Structure formats: structure tokens, C-alpha cells
Image (tube, rainbow, N blue to C red; front, top):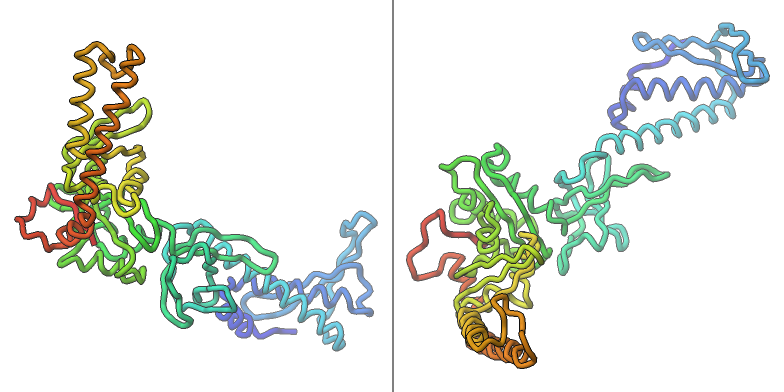
Length: 401
């Protein structure tokens, strides 16, 4: 008896299952069917298919009470009844489904962080991305706020988890994860793919704003310029893929090993006057010009919040006037013997002096904010290329898309 190996190879191509796995599934199915055949007269059956010519060899086995093979003999393979044939078919399909699930799991496990692309499939209230033979599930929590993924549209996402399920492996993907932005820049920027430019850190609030810190391993390559691209086209391509040209702003800033420099860069597009680090509590106090205070903080604190996540430092932002007012008040209190050199009160009067200093400084802060309500919008336009002042040298500027 022979079987058509081409038919098994067709299954291999259609299901994406290794040929030997398909053959083994067939052998298992045939052995199960022969075992159920009433006239075989054996406890167990074993089927071997020649991988080169399709010749089928059947062995019948007698087992002892412990399940050990005590005798085995060869039988002539033969056709069997409809019910037994149906059993063989069911066993074969089951084994193929198991092999297909395992192949899917094996293909995608360990690929967390990889970019996938395909057509969007809306099934009820659930969203999937078709990947040929497989699909990736995009939970609602992993979709960009206010983004509508249209059925049939092309989209990209990043694999965040591969789960084993009874009905097969489930690929879970995200469009909100920071790794998606990292992967998209790697696709758009050859210098990243080549290892010349590295993304050292990223902080993202999907649909609103992302900060990316980059560095170059080649002194002749500007990492910010490489990621922005000629005329900003590379950064805009990433925004387009996020469907976020009007929603998600991307700040590309220069990485720095020195924490004070990194904090200053991370607050881009705001310009920083000074950064003072307090490692004991992980705080960085940043001083900015009065007219940059709103820009440094960002709408609802977003710029400062993302900068803190990017750098790992808690960031306290003060205007130059506020900082100067605090320093003046503390100096007066120190000269009067009300506080020590570290700013600790030496008496109740000293505690009141510190409180008054902070209140006076906060008034200066609020005054700066009120005078500069539109600073973030204005400076955002300037950072995008509308600043009438001469551009800073490449080594001193950050870019915003």
C-alpha cells in the first residue's frame, strides 16, 4: 500500500507545518484506525510511512498488563470500513491542528518587540491584524486613544505577548507600546539598522506625545538629524504610521551620559538655564527662563512628566525669577541666623522665613505662567522650523516632529 506524498506536501504548504510532522500525524492517525479495526486482533498498532516513496508498513503489537510490547508482527495494510476511516480522518485533523498551533507558537514565541504588519480585521468589537495564516489580537487597551482602525486597512503593531491557548497560540499586539515607535524608527532610519545610531531611551503617552533619546556611535553622524531625516520626512513617516500627524508629537532629543545634560535635553523644546541634581532623593531641579516655563512644563505637565520618565529623575522646574527669589529669601534668612547653610530652620522664626520664601517664589512662578499661557504653542512652531532666529549648531539642537 502506498500513499500520495504530494498530498502530504500540499498540507505542509497550506498549513505551514513541517513535512515530517505531517507524515508523523498521518502515521498516528492510521495506527489509531488500524487499532480500532475489529479484525486486526492486536492490542496496539504501529504504522511506518517511507518518506521517499510513500510505502506504508503496518505492525501489530501484543502488550502485557504493564503496556510493554511482548510481540510484534507485520500485517498487510488494507482498507477498512467507513466508521474506522472517519476515525482516522478525525485523528489526522486533530494532530494537524495541534501541529499547526505549535508551529504558530514556535514561530512567534521570543518575538516580543518585533513589528508585525497586515490588514485590520474587525470581528464584532474585537480587532485583529491578519498575518497570512495567523492573526494578531489587538486588545482595546493596546489601541491608540481616539484612533479608528478601519476594517481592511493596513496597520502595524508590535508583538507584546505570545500565549498558548487550547485552541492555539494567541499573538497579542499593541499600538500603544513604546517599542512600536522604536521599531518604526528602526524601519525608517538606516543608521539605526546599521548600529550607527542607537535609541537609548523612550517615554510615550500614546496618541499625545513621545520623547526619544538617541546617540551616535560615529562622531560624523548627528543622531537627531538622522532620525528627523531630510525635511523631517523620517520622523513624519513614523507619525503617519501611527496615524497621529495631528495627535502624537515626537520629540527627538540627544542622549547624554551626564545626568544633568540628559535632563536638560529631555525637556526639549524648552531651553534650560541650569540643572541641579539631588541624588539622595533622585530629584533634578531645573531652572528655565521665565518665558520658557510653560513650555518646559507642557500642557497638563506632559513635557515634564515624559522627561522624568525618560531620564529616571524627578524633575522640579523653576523659572529664573522664581529661583532668584528663593535664593534671595534664603540668603536673607541665613544672614539673619534663622536657617543653617543647608536651609534647615534654627527656630520657629526660621521656619516662617522658609515658608515666606516659598510663597514669594510661588507668586513669581504663577506670574511667569500667566504671562506665558501660549508659550508651548509658540515655541512648538519655532522648534518645527518657524523660528525667525538663526538655528543653533547641530550639536546643540534637538528636533521635534
